[in-house]
Length: 215
Image 1 (tube, helix red, strand yellow):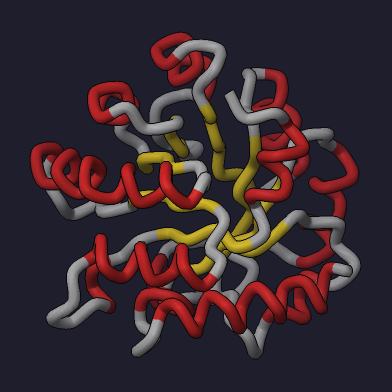
Image 2 (cartoon, rainbow, N blue to C red; image 1 turned 90 degrees about the horizontal axis):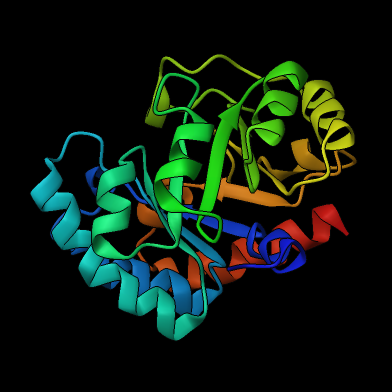
């Protein structure tokens, strides 16, 4: 089990996978590089892959996260998360309910929930969420159907809950200023890491940038 303050620190640079950006590289190699550069959390999100393929990826990435001491969760697939021994799962508003994920995975699992409003955030916290992902903050090609969340709403969510909050959506070195003064615990990134030629160097630069904005 991850104590809340340890989990809060793990939000700093939250890596969300997407093989669309990798070219000829492998996802485990890119995740390992991102971890070397300072990524503090990994979510395996491969929505277009089947369960068997995602399970194989999870089993390859989980030992890398274990060695780095970094939490590892699977997006949406509660049963698969349990099957591969992941630390937990991240669910959205339209996915398995937070309470159902908690019931399936037990009290020690990490359950994250995507939210966009204070009402959703409070409901997720009450249902047993360990952390919240809030976004999209900025329009992003990674998730073209995502509605945008204003920085003021992110600030209100952070003030309303007592669990960790990570922001997501269009965040990179150039756009991190949008998080200033919101009270968020970190940034979740996709292409800023996995489209980079060197995910290790990208992660190192992102960690420094996020710290400079949030501190």
